[in-house]
Image (cartoon, rainbow, N blue to C red; front, side, top):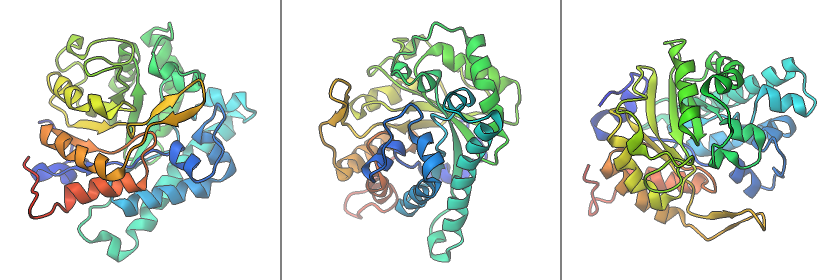
Length: 323
């Protein structure tokens, strides 16, 4: 297993690094209107303190790493809605500062440190499809080359890389072409750390229908790609996907699926139900299978992260975790 020094303290001895849960969907649960192309970035403009509070709530629930509200924040997208270039850059920096401030505020309370390590901050890099806001981050059918995607991502990438976040997380990556673009950016500066997580179509393919077994072995094993895995995907596919990714990498596997509910695009609502306790039970199996970094994506909240923390950090003596 190739473990980067920044992750090693969390993963030593077969331990788990616990990520936070959904940001935008949890803000919606708290009454915020995110029906906008900027999605969670809209709340950065309207009520940044609500984002900071949600970060704190995830840390209190047990998260070892919180992810910034920059998934939908791009220079191009923010300028479309009237922000200047300078204002767009400042808003992305604000998102990182909110997460860092939340982490530092949490860590300043002595009782929060008991049995914990100082949490990390990951800066979210959303896919090109998030900027389009047309659902194509679940298809990857942009019709752009890797070089064109590098041009789109480059400025935000370097802004976030220099923002004070501990690493970048390239989330909901739907296509092998976009993954190659991230690899090209990462190869340009060996001091930048990044994780990459794919949105997946089923138990064997990412969303552009590329089968994971078609990836070149160790294709993304750059020294500064610190983790590879899956997010924004149905939990039902996670066990098989863990096995598929283990075949192509020796890096820690990152897993943060949706709650299990499904988005009804026709009626603009979520269908199905999920219970945090059931989610917490599932993550124990994912950990047994080899996932090292585990959290939640859409429709998961602090209760889900607390369930993960309870299951992985404080198992009942009569129900041990065998990993």
